[in-house]
Image 1: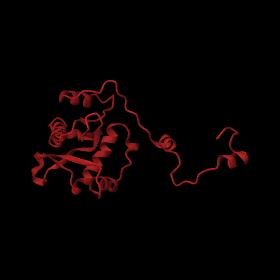
Image 2: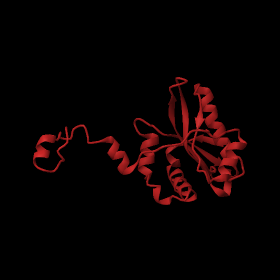
Image 3: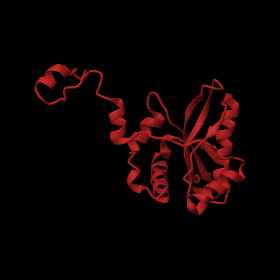
Image 4: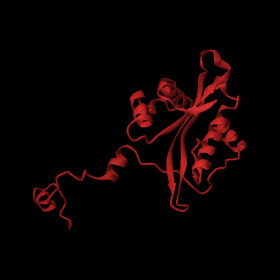
Length: 185
């Protein structure tokens, strides 16, 4: 069974995000807290959406959460329509092969169809051949000719420049103090 994420799912989803980071060999990059996840999904202006996969075989306890998909909206200026960007899709190893991943993708494709979104897209690590094979099996294909770029850390701060409310530096005064080369301002 696939259903939208509910507040009671936060602990399971947060734990699976960490499991995914371990699988992708980047556990030190998984910095999101449970509170951040809660705010992103259920805050006043949610920007993140999600679904969970429930193992129906565990009906006695309401079913175990065995997978999740977290996604957000993107927009195509070429089609003039929204789409879904699938940030993470993960099924616990013990539940793989039972159709949960396919059901999560089917659910997101249905959301796209119902809302007239133009696409469902995601990134996959080049080395993750099981995922690539799975995605090809459901009919997805890579975006040949496109490379993902990202700004983070110091590079992001550098490109952003000083905050708008930062005091402006008078280059002539700084140059006169000898801390700036004598080049035209």
